[in-house]
Length: 280
Image 1 (cartoon, rainbow, N blue to C red):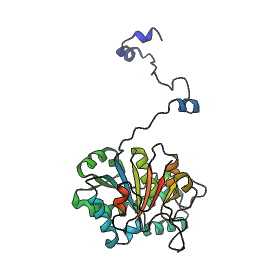
Image 2: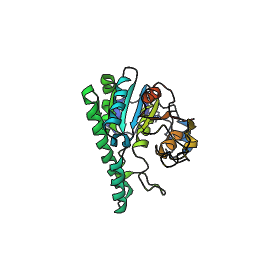
Image 3: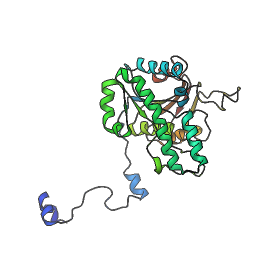
Image 4: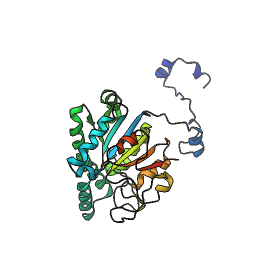
């Protein structure tokens, strides 16, 4: 190789000689834990000033009196904050999943059905925000168009359900696809290194029990992701907290009541009007 190293770059094309690419992976397998640890580095945050907002499907199902004030509050905050807005799945998704489960359809196909159903809610939100220059982007467009659209309008709308579809992760205990609209929004925020994820719901936050069936349920004001990943939540998928605890970026997760004026604005400013879950 000492002789070959003196060749000019074009000589390799003519002679067909092999050429090594200098890297830390030359002498070891990519499966080696030692190699993986030695190559660890800080993950570059692509969009550290952006906040991800996910609006629960039940709020969309509740109609104009619920959803229009939330969208108006988002617009009022755009001068101070760049946001991506995602929709959650609602009553239609539950019905579709129940039918699919009754028919014995595989988990991957149920994941695809839920993604398609949640996309309808994203279309509704996108249409309502379109008069203000806020566009809805597909999954493919989010990769290339998101930075430009955030500079133009400071907000975009997308379908938060990840496009795993028939490649959905299999879990022995999962009766529904584990990475739905909640987990998908967090995954995207983690990839982009966003500063926080805000889940907008029709309750004040996460309770120790479902407040709709347990009037004495207590609101959890502050918690750690590792603790929440083992406790069922009535308003945010448990998978979110598993991902948050394992994430490379320390992203805060807030849960707020979208029906309370100003709660979303407070969360965007870094306040805690509902439940705040810290990564570490």
